[in-house]
Length: 233
Image (tube, rainbow, N blue to C red):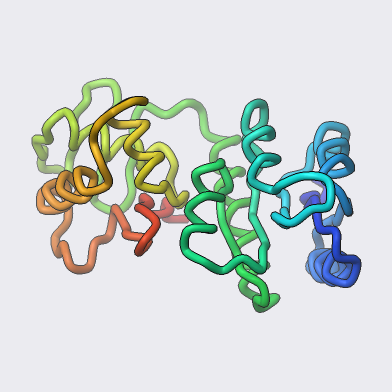
């Protein structure tokens, strides 16, 4: 029998930390607690948690900087939990490498649902061999042949449209900000702007979606960016 997933909680406010620990433990998960960035990084290295719940306002370090540091060597899912509720705060956290962002106060059910999503995503990535085909619903992307099919019919994309689609499809369910997409698709130092992403996204959707006003494959996160639909269970 496999051991329960370990959830590392990096939160300096004791009552919130204990609330989170009690919540995850009551749902069959193993909590690991840290009140500082230093403690959190040590536990991350030593105990290899399955998910990190990270507060941005830690006494010995900025959560965004910690996220960037972790992303240099680990792909552990990071859910930022913060009282900072501005859209720009969420964008910065996702740009830094966070997988999700939850604004305090939040409901227990919502947090647990988001933990389940990132755990499921990680499990799929671990058990599946390196894939040469990405698919969800009627959409299939053959990475070797660089061909795209919708309901078994081939769709012809421009190089930018194909790179845009595969950049998102390789990270199903994960929100990518406009800046992340620009770096991945156009490269560092590009003069392209978020407007270019929106223009190419519109043409891509016209080719792969039945209804561009209610897309099934590439979904919009308003004010933040886009995400590829989660694979079907």
